[in-house]
Length: 229
Image (cartoon, rainbow, N blue to C red):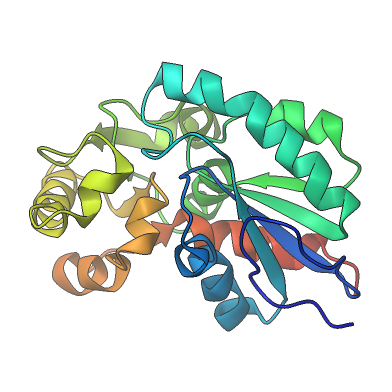
């Protein structure tokens, strides 16, 4: 039986073809919302996906404590998804929570959205500005960017991914991104996958005329190289 693309959290048939498993770190009981990043990757890259979210985190990952709580849940969910047939797993969070632990736990490639976005950014610019929901860039992103990192900005009044969907979210993102470019950034890295959810990347590129790297799309690009053909 062909798998249903982007199936949400809960029991599902084992995929019959190589399939990318998407781990969402924002808890939701809405199957459409859970599957959103998977559907985006299907449209862009053509591979099938199925999506699950970790439990008990309605605000996702937004600080050290929420990341600590999420890590064992991510590892457990990755094991389940690999057992169900995922040939590649994407942790759809730019903080790359539990990335190394998950790679040790399963026998398929595991990709972190943050590290993937940083790698793509290096191919596009020399002064990378990081836009996210924390005051500092995620450590994994900083490690990959090295001396090409030029600064990090958090939009005003945005501290959790759910804040991005508030009325002030998109205007605050646009203003923060403009500050990064004014300070010298020649490429922007979106260090929160909630920025993918609100679809802000095209508006940023039109407004600021610099490349903008979406972390979910970057992880999907990497996944297109890991999958069995």
